[in-house]
Length: 203
Image 1 (cartoon, rainbow, N blue to C red):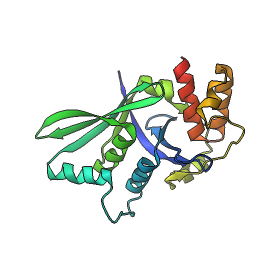
Image 2: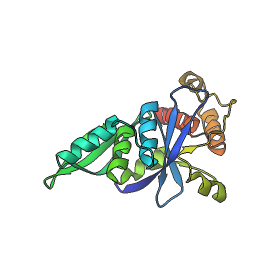
Image 3: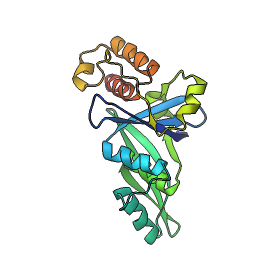
Image 4: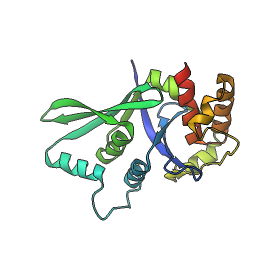
């Protein structure tokens, strides 16, 4: 299976649901985006790593891991998002010490927070991107402006019931696909990720 390199596009947030964030990964040589729902702590850690000027007064957990790894000459070479099961992404850290490579299982949000701190590339397999990637029709000017912002603006689409699992489970596949198109059009990445995961469960 071929690997596809991803860049971090940004983080979207919801003012209507506490603790709901979507990390947006972008295909390097393509137009697809991969939204991954993450927790508030991981979103903060990733945002801090992206914003180089921000230095927390004490090390965050991911900073501690980086400091610990540096002290013992462990390097994270790359991160691979290798599996998607029931809407949950699974990732591995490819690490190296004394020219010996080790693979360590990790939550995707933690793996990406560490990848940023080690300047390590992020990859996924093509079949995962085929299954979970979303094509976005974006205004080029607006897209360029978005690169300057770590937090992407979210269009609040109140009519989309995708904010809750229960709301999604009552929908047919046809209705879910229509909601997905609407969420993507509104750039509501968090909702799009939830809808996509529900569709994935049924396929």
